[in-house]
Length: 90
Image (cartoon, rainbow, N blue to C red):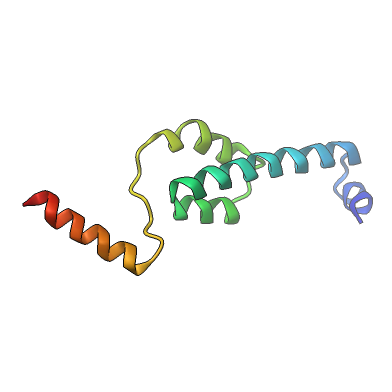
Protein backbone atom coordinates (compact mmCIF):
# COMPACT_ATOMS: atom_id res chain seq x y z
CA UNK A 1 0.00 0.00 0.00
CA UNK A 2 2.73 2.49 0.96
CA UNK A 3 4.79 1.83 -2.21
CA UNK A 4 1.66 2.40 -4.33
CA UNK A 5 0.93 5.65 -2.50
CA UNK A 6 4.50 6.86 -3.04
CA UNK A 7 4.29 5.97 -6.74
CA UNK A 8 0.96 7.80 -7.14
CA UNK A 9 2.28 10.91 -5.41
CA UNK A 10 5.48 10.75 -7.43
CA UNK A 11 8.03 10.75 -4.59
CA UNK A 12 10.49 8.05 -3.57
CA UNK A 13 9.27 5.58 -0.96
CA UNK A 14 12.23 6.27 1.35
CA UNK A 15 11.37 9.99 1.43
CA UNK A 16 7.75 9.25 2.32
CA UNK A 17 8.88 6.97 5.17
CA UNK A 18 11.31 9.62 6.48
CA UNK A 19 8.60 12.32 6.43
CA UNK A 20 6.09 10.08 8.21
CA UNK A 21 8.62 9.09 10.91
CA UNK A 22 9.72 12.73 11.34
CA UNK A 23 6.12 13.89 11.72
CA UNK A 24 5.12 11.10 14.13
CA UNK A 25 8.18 11.69 16.31
CA UNK A 26 7.52 15.41 16.77
CA UNK A 27 3.77 14.84 17.15
CA UNK A 28 4.39 12.29 19.92
CA UNK A 29 6.77 14.60 21.80
CA UNK A 30 4.36 17.53 21.49
CA UNK A 31 1.40 15.40 22.65
CA UNK A 32 3.41 14.29 25.67
CA UNK A 33 4.33 17.88 26.60
CA UNK A 34 0.75 19.13 26.09
CA UNK A 35 -0.73 16.30 28.15
CA UNK A 36 1.74 16.80 31.01
CA UNK A 37 1.02 20.53 31.14
CA UNK A 38 -2.77 20.08 30.88
CA UNK A 39 -3.01 21.95 27.55
CA UNK A 40 -6.06 20.16 26.16
CA UNK A 41 -6.66 22.64 23.31
CA UNK A 42 -3.08 22.24 22.07
CA UNK A 43 -3.44 18.46 22.29
CA UNK A 44 -6.57 18.58 20.11
CA UNK A 45 -4.94 21.00 17.66
CA UNK A 46 -2.00 18.61 17.19
CA UNK A 47 -4.45 15.82 16.47
CA UNK A 48 -6.34 17.83 13.83
CA UNK A 49 -3.60 19.89 12.18
CA UNK A 50 -0.82 18.08 10.34
CA UNK A 51 2.12 20.31 9.42
CA UNK A 52 4.85 17.65 9.16
CA UNK A 53 6.08 18.53 12.63
CA UNK A 54 6.41 22.31 12.23
CA UNK A 55 3.46 23.17 14.49
CA UNK A 56 4.63 20.63 17.06
CA UNK A 57 8.22 21.94 17.06
CA UNK A 58 6.96 25.51 17.56
CA UNK A 59 4.86 24.36 20.51
CA UNK A 60 7.72 22.45 22.15
CA UNK A 61 10.31 25.20 21.85
CA UNK A 62 8.16 28.35 22.05
CA UNK A 63 4.62 27.94 23.33
CA UNK A 64 5.21 25.28 25.99
CA UNK A 65 7.47 27.74 27.81
CA UNK A 66 4.56 30.18 28.22
CA UNK A 67 2.47 29.72 31.39
CA UNK A 68 -1.03 28.94 30.11
CA UNK A 69 -3.82 28.13 32.58
CA UNK A 70 -4.18 24.38 33.08
CA UNK A 71 -7.30 22.64 31.86
CA UNK A 72 -9.19 21.16 34.84
CA UNK A 73 -9.31 17.37 34.70
CA UNK A 74 -12.59 16.92 36.54
CA UNK A 75 -15.53 18.93 37.92
CA UNK A 76 -14.30 18.20 41.47
CA UNK A 77 -10.93 19.72 40.63
CA UNK A 78 -12.67 22.74 39.14
CA UNK A 79 -14.68 23.24 42.36
CA UNK A 80 -11.47 22.98 44.38
CA UNK A 81 -9.82 25.63 42.20
CA UNK A 82 -12.75 28.00 42.77
CA UNK A 83 -12.50 27.50 46.55
CA UNK A 84 -8.76 28.22 46.49
CA UNK A 85 -9.32 31.44 44.53
CA UNK A 86 -11.83 32.64 47.13
CA UNK A 87 -9.43 31.88 49.98
CA UNK A 88 -6.46 33.59 48.33
CA UNK A 89 -8.42 36.77 47.50
CA UNK A 90 -9.66 37.17 51.11
